[in-house]
Structures are given as C-alpha cells and as structure tokens.
Length: 308
Image (cartoon, rainbow, N blue to C red; front, side, top):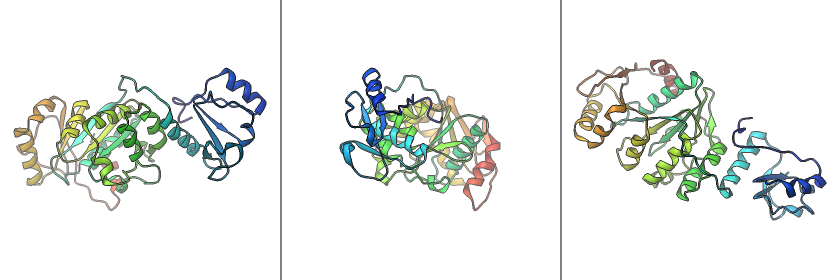
C-alpha cells in the first residue's frame, strides 16, 4: 500500500459491530456507509466521513463531510488524507530524512530546471525516492510533468497556519511520473508562491524532507531571503551556468561580490551546462553537461541524467 507508513486501517462490515469498535478504539478518521450511521455515537472519531454515491448531503449523514464512493482507491485515500490534514494535529519530527540538493543560477536560461530534473532522474534510477520541489516565481512544472491533480497551493495555505499536518497533506497531493520522480503541480496563481515568507520556506523544506530520500529544490534566479533559507538547509548546491558571456559574468559577480557565496562555498558543485567553457567562474569539482536539443523537454533531462 502506497500510504502504509501513514495509515493504519481497520475494517468493520456490520453496523452492530461498529458500535463496539468505536467504543473501544480511537480512530482519527472513518469512512462510513449511510446504513452504518444511525444509532452509532461518532463523537470519539475525530473525522467521520460518509461515502457518497454522488456529491452533496443526504439522509442521516447530512452533517458529515463526504467522500465520493465510486472512484479509484488511490483517489479515495488522497481525499481522506487531504481532509484529515485539515483537522488532525500531526507533529513533524526533528529528523530530516532526505538529502537536500538545491539548484540555482544567477542567470535565467542557463538550464537550471533541466539540471535539477536530470539529477532527480539519476537518483530515481538508482532506486531512491526523489521529490522535486519547484520554487520558481513562475513554475515550469507543466513543461515537464502531467498537470492533473491537486495544486501545491493547498500546502502553502497549511504552512501559513503553521499546521503540523503538512506531511499528511503532501501525501495526498504529490504525484509521481513514469521515471519515479515525485512532484507537485504548479500553484493556482502567481501570488501563492511569491507571498511565502522565509519561515514558510523552512517549514516547507522540513515537511518535504521528512518523507523522502532525495529532495531536489529548483530555485528562482533571485538570491533573496527565501533562496538563502534553502541554501542553509541544503546538503549540496548546484550552481548552474552555460557558455554565454552573460551567464559567466553573472556567476563571477555572485562568487566574487555576494556575501552569501562565502557561506555556501563548501557545499557548492559548479555545473557547466550546454558544454560551457570553464571561464573565470569555474571551480572544482565541476560537472559538464552537453548541449542537447529536443522538442520534448522531458527527453533532454532524461538523457542528461547520465552526466551525474
């Protein structure tokens, strides 16, 4: 079961037996048929949910939130986790399970997202559980992944409320592509991403890192407080540039003039994308990736993954 680490399930097939079970065991959530509701004290259940054949309220379960009955079991589980995350208090542990890799460039167009996804694909091919987190001001997720599913905006709202159930919500909205990379669909609108504070970013990283092996964070080109928060949390930082003079100059300026660089120098890996020349900004160790062209962007990062 995909969510076996989150859900401990029990089944009751008789209404009479349900009374006994509810009286003797504590349940965070319950999925109930309409015929099971009458005469049962549901107050011990934090989140009683009614299985409905259609949307809306009906009969004895009119006051209960509902879950659509006739859908894939994975969708039902996702809906249960999403609703549970809103009412249950779950403490996020202090242990960060994932290794966090931040991918950043001071120059747009250097191939930062392609590099981030190539690395994610490499780790997924090694059997690692990989979560790709796109924090760009304007998300490029739709160019690489299917967009069906719940938006990451729901998670942002929970971070604003400092709700410890963020990990449960992540379980309900995260998606996975055919290569084994888990990801979030883009925000509902531009402001959902850009109103996040530095504290929100730290909370987001903690929630994501607590439930994966590799967390790959794709950053915007701006070096602001939120970027620095990711740098501080990261175990490794890929600094990406290409062969253009603009990208090389911007990288050199960042490395020679920005105070942040000195604080992250020890965990930086310099990535020369599109067969870029070393130039003045180069450092060791360096990864050099060839310049590939393809109409299907997903093919580019998959082919480049071997470079890691």
